[in-house]
Image 1: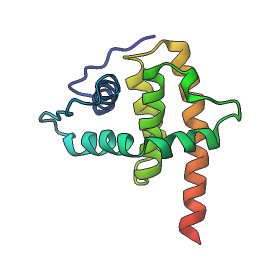
Image 2: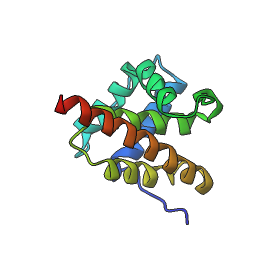
Image 3: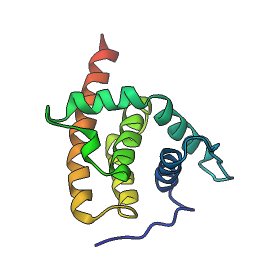
Image 4: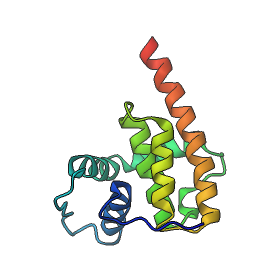
Amino acid sequence: MKINYSPKNNPRVIIIQKLYSYLINNEELINFPKHRFKKFIKEVVNGSIERNDLLEDELKKYLSKDFNSKSFDKVFQIILKAATYELLYKPNLSLRIIIKEYLNASNYFIEENQTKYLNALLDTIGKNLRNLNERISTN
């Protein structure tokens, strides 16, 4: 069942929109209008753009050796990278919350069968990244 989420209420939808807009026209300045999660949205958007190469390396590391992010459509790539950014740089946010929020937001942009695949990918990436972070922080 496809659920429509209002971009005004869902910060992950806004993040995906801003990153897609940047991908289409990276010469244009990104505008962040007033929103109760403006700081969070701005941080994830700018962080995803600034760390694009690192995010792609992380995706390649934890997904199949045959993985090529270029084989996914642009919106799918954006969702994967933004979620990976949060998994890496927002350790206080629960893995389950990050995945759930991006799956909910993805319903606004991609087909249901792609959402199921996205769920599996984010689960794999998230578990690997969080396990790695836990090992690093305990040493």
